[in-house]
Amino acid sequence: MPTTVSEPLSLIDDTFATKLLTGLVAIPGKSGDEQATAARIVKELTAAGVPLSAITYDDAHKKSPYGGQCGNLIVKLPGTLRGPRRMLMAHIDTVPLCVGCEPEVRGDYLVSKRSDTALGGDDRAGASVVLHTALMLQKHKVPHPPLTLFWPVQEEVGLVGARNVAVSKLGGPKLCFNWDGGDASLVTIGATGADDLQITIKGLAAHAGAHPEDGVSAAVIAAKAIASLAENGWHGLVVKGRKTGTSNIGIVQGGDATNVVLDHLFLRGEARSHDPEFRARIVKEFERAFVMAAKSTSNTSKVRGEVEFTATMKYESFRLPEDSPVIAAASSAIRTVGLEPVTKISNGGLDANWMTALGLPTVTLGCGQEAIHTVKERLHLPSYLKACRIGLLLATGAL
Image 1 (cartoon, rainbow, N blue to C red):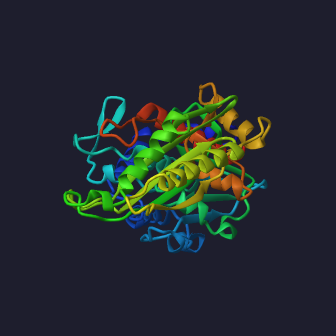
Image 2: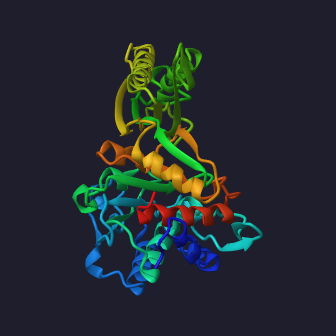
């Protein structure tokens, strides 16, 4: 039985850890379709001796606007050592581009054999780190404090699983570790907040050849609004004095004929900032620009367009204090495996946003993903294997 901080590391079989990863990556599982991946994790856990009574799902998918096959997968292990409960987590969904991936090892990297798919290392690598840790604890009877293993669903479509988790099922962990993107030396201690913007423009249809002057073009209203936002520095990278953020219109839908003045247009965008008040200002400027554009666009009968504008918070920004115990534990584990920890603030959303908002301070650690969400995605296996070691160290509670 291991008796020192570093002794559990000698138990790790890199070949087994890599095979476990490859098996998870090969399972299709875009957001909402996570059941097969969750079932594979449950199969591995029960085969290793984890009782079914310790394994549960919540109903996060029933609260999701996307539906879904299953909720979050949660496993609670009683401790063999006294100490505060710890949680290890990583989401199990991938972006649609990963469906059809055929993983293979090429040198130090795991890649997709197919040139038309992403790999899915985001975040099957993180899911594998958490699973590998549980299997090592079970197989080798490594002493550990009470543990919660958490595999959220639907992270890629707005942190839906983490947002809707049944918190009571997590057991009140005090130190929480989330594996997602980047190098194994990274400790992400904060992240930006974001609002989802939905804009419906209502114009007036008319024959575009015979009487275009009778119409009110939704396209013109959208063009005026977006041009105004860009010209005044509210679209794209937004810098106003010391305040910074970003914004984007990413979806524009409408129209089905070239000979009809476009009367209806739906747009979807986002606003991000680490400063909640400044993010609200960006949202306000977006709404003002579209309302003003609608008021300034009319036909010959003075009929104007209309705008319906809705902003919904996707996740709030956070930043953990530098002296947080969870940061200290993660940094110590990283040093133990021979790396120097690098703290980071992310400009993207993480499941840790919602975990922290729910009262569970969470750091996010890397496990080797590169070029995620693209067909050039690859996973650096030495970094993944370092992450497996970091996971095992953190699960023992020794750091």
